[in-house]
Picture (cartoon, rainbow, N blue to C red):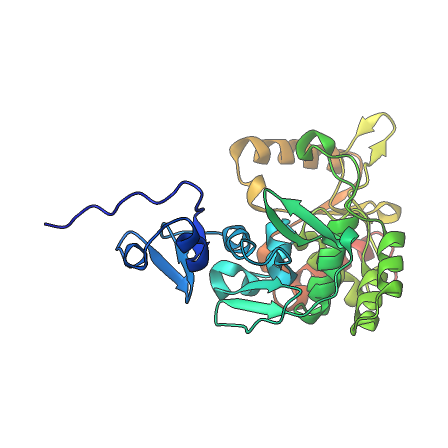
Length: 307
């Protein structure tokens, strides 16, 4: 008859080190019980799922300088990343420590010099802050994906939905952080910041804007409210008021019946006041945004744009 393993001390978290377990009175035999799994040598988990924060908290038991960094910090902070860097896909967690550590298949260690102001705490887990994390991502992202991250940092939030009123960073603050850093990749960061714009609400909107500008289409206004007299025509994702052309990118949040009805009513108001509204979906972003550029170029030319 299989014996039920004895309960673990409540001081041990979802992930813990063997050293912490031994210090809490747990035996080596108990660590081999079937209700526990091994993350890697010397690191154990209670259940099948754990987070990067769980791992960082466990490692801090013996090394207080451990913190999450790079793509992992970005993911924890909710910064936009391509799926190829998602922890769930890569099975890699990026960390840094004041002490030399050897990377494994799962734990990727970086030697970074981090100022105290560049560190944030999240329920016992330390990680690099948003601006510092963005600078570190230059080694992991394509130029367009890096612009998307910077757009995310400088966009003005919607307090009603996000519970904050200030952006995470300003273009001026980012420029100062880039110029004062001594890292490689500053040229790429400066180039990305030159293409970043306040107003983009999603990575898809950033991708769409970059594709259109690359195709020779003028820089659009981003989420700027449009009025015709006292009639509110909403805030198009991208707009060219001079030619009364705008684009709305349809993401998953627009697929509910209520939102679709609202979008249709808004589109009719715009049409009644002489606006051309183009609605794009994921397909428009493929092949470098060729389809989106074709439709926007045609609409602008129909209104007198000579590009």
